[in-house]
Length: 194
Image 1: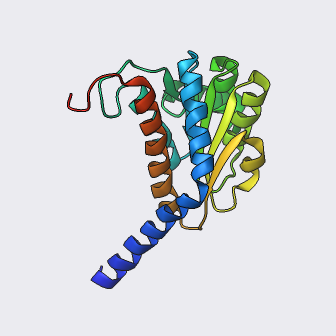
Image 2: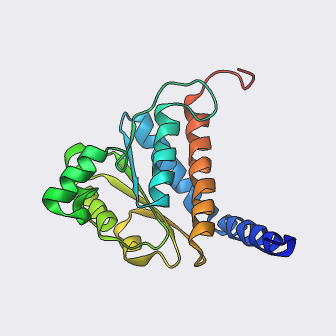
């Protein structure tokens, strides 16, 4: 790939991420929702398809493990990580139920479900959002394009503008790191040098 193509792609990534500045209020609100739920002893569940499943797993592992500093482990689970649950539910109920069925079984009122989707569409995520509503689980959407059919199903949402899946996923990674920064600020009580 020539340098001009590389430069164009880097510029596109930078522009997409910079566009998040127009949604600072929503980012702050979602960060507060996640922090408050964790402070109240609730858990975080995450889900997504394909590359978005990787983002969902990334967010959960940073909470249950650690993001930057040694702080207490926080309750988080990536619904895309349990292959036995996914294949069982997919086989018995259909792929569209793989996340909704888990939310039904694991979700409790006050928990938070974070859904990652570059298109804002997909039956599995829609059914997860609907199950969240039934269980009184707070639903957060990190979405792309125009938000798709999933946007109105979410209690809170950030829609990354643009059509390029990879640029949206890059912005989603920045968003999840911003939320994790807020969690770190709330739960870490040591010094930065540790």
